[in-house]
Image 1 (tube, rainbow, N blue to C red):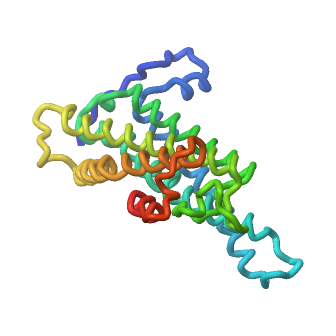
Image 2: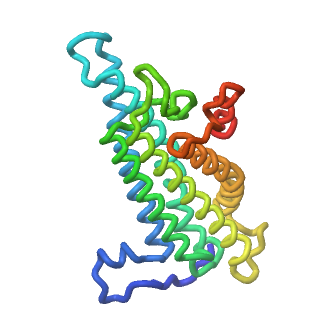
Length: 256
């Protein structure tokens, strides 16, 4: 494994610790931030899973229920989104941030500031999702299928307006973060390898990250566009996903 001494781009030795972590662009520091934050979301989603399983152990309609029907679907939705988007991908990015430059002999990622910005997009997207749960989280299921996401839907499953819209903003920030990180890893691996480090000599982990981020760069911009259109449908009067002529299926195709 190639190892190049890594420098701190942003903080001197005399800087306060809190300022260093807020302004760092060092790939190891950003990797640690990703790791800690993703584990926090993992624990949060795990607590939600405990509430879900506990509620399932209670007969429906009894006074022993710990959450209402609407709160239960909110828990299921938020749990699924946190596990899939706010834990799995960032958890992998934590190790990629830390080890990729070391494995290919690079001093840092190709765009250190973009790397830092992608983390903070991720962090604030999680804050938005958490706040949405406090004011009425999405309760459509984690796949967010239309017409349940339509502002004008009826019945007990209809989403709370403020919470869903805030969650949609969090989803946009999250997917933007993943897209920026994917571009950063691709450029780093293809253009910043040490002299003599050909692609065929790269460690298997670096190859895995390269292939994975290529797939992410192919898939996640579509989800980003879908999230923006969904937000527009709910707030700007558009009707992409609410049309009776197959509009509901359009979101399913974009999501998957």
